[in-house]
Length: 451
Ligand SMILES: *Cc1c(COP(=O)(O)O)cnc(C)c1O
Image (cartoon, rainbow, N blue to C red; front, side, top):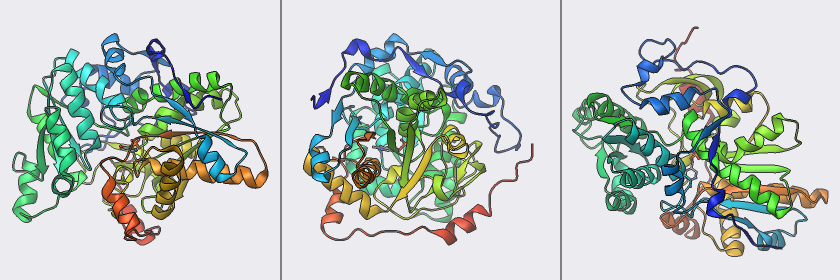
């Protein structure tokens, strides 16, 4: 039995899988936050370059990956798949556990899979500079790296509390040539108006999005880039699942269940969508998204139109949402603290094609420690949710005495998240229960879209 299932560089996928033509039912329109009417491609041109807008709505099942993008992907792709034999032994399960490891990218997560093509398509469309926001810094670092690969400037509005508390991710962005600005800043109208009211504001992702979008709209040479949620980001991430299918075939297995953690939905879509295609074609397979109980978008949210950001500047999409001004508790899996979800993932959950489950913070860290002590790799707090999901499936298989095949996505490593593990071992981590009241209040403020 092989521990690592590796593919040659020549096996990097030549096309991304676009799930749009295979979706059960029509897609809901995307709504302009100002007019509350469906957006047109022209509405999006000040923010995104044409090739990206085309991918966002493309009816084509397969979309070519340009050679320039595959060439950069070669720095770390194809990513390895592992058989988690030691974890299986520890659990005493008859299940076989496989995982795909996206922590081998330069930024340490799956995010460069989309940052690279986004930088490339902006470059060929004539964009000189990209503006974006980042919370804990994983997306900002990935985009700074990607811009460096294609000679673009990169400006990153980083939520001020993270800017001061997570200086190493700021250093990564600067090392890759990014211009990192603590948000709220005095560079934009949005930032200045917040600072006028509260000079000591810690910032929020919503404010940082507003600043980045304003920056992009205000300059002819600049576009905006988003690290998750949107259709084109899910599309780019499908290299994960496409490679995984080949690797499972080499291992001589096919998964009964495919699992990934869920924040905005991009790594889940990347791993899951190529298997959703099999499921729609009749395969008997489960596809499971795992999210934190403290930010339970897919399991407790409503499926309705809502703004993508707190400041109501971003597009309105039909998705599972907890309300755009819901502030999730401060769990360490910062990448999973988003109020909404990918519209594509949301629709698949709504149609019952994919499943969702939530886990508590402590349970995810317990899974992370079991994983690190058997498989060696220190997982990101976000990825630990997928590990928890896989371990629970393996324990169920044990109870049922079934030889189930489990595949999960390990979306990244936790090397810059050691403070979270410090807190865990110091007994300082707590569980945040389902914040029912806060969610109910926030859901009362959804936009009134009538089509
Ligand atoms: C950002 C991030 C996530 C969550 O984002 P998705 O878009 O839901 O994939 C998960 N894992 C890691 C390591 C991340 O950096």
